[in-house]
Image (cartoon, rainbow, N blue to C red; front, side, top):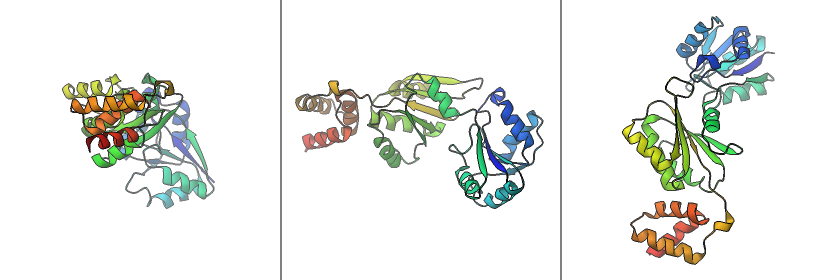
Length: 275
């Protein structure tokens, strides 16, 4: 009975691969790879000649039997394009199938873009929520973000460059103008980590078109019961915000961060005030 090794590979700098990862990739009988060309270049760089097979989003189910058969006679490694496999990359189904078939599953830890961005963000790292990619459609994205508004934990997302501005706009409107970090090209020559408020990060990428995959780290909601406003204070702030032309959703998000009240309750009061 073979072991399925989940091998983390570099997210940019090839020097980040571990000695154990290199040894494992050299010793297994088969490597399941997300991109044969990309992993092929990595293996060639380190003079590793182990046989590979493709394992990606659109064949991950059809390839299960082949990989399980290989595990019956020896060890298999799983790698993604970059970073830790099975984390926002194909692998979950394979891990479940291997465990169900009685095989051992062992992680070979190493590079991970979400963790790298989190620890360098300057935001709390003692408790966080990793959420992967936000939904592509605006309405779904906004609903997903709204569910997170009261969490006191640091929030970690992935995002593509062509959806970055839309995602940042929705984060600001639904959560308020929180502190955040936007990280790209981590460990590479042009590594960039921008740490500021969401609004300033948005403005930066207006004049600097975003390139590369992004990891977004956003502050959680500040919990301070001593700072909660009275009903009268909240109503006064609602009136002032509406007079200044703020939209109901933007006003509710801003006041939720300032008042200690839940956004949903504030939104309901705004609608009642406008009725």
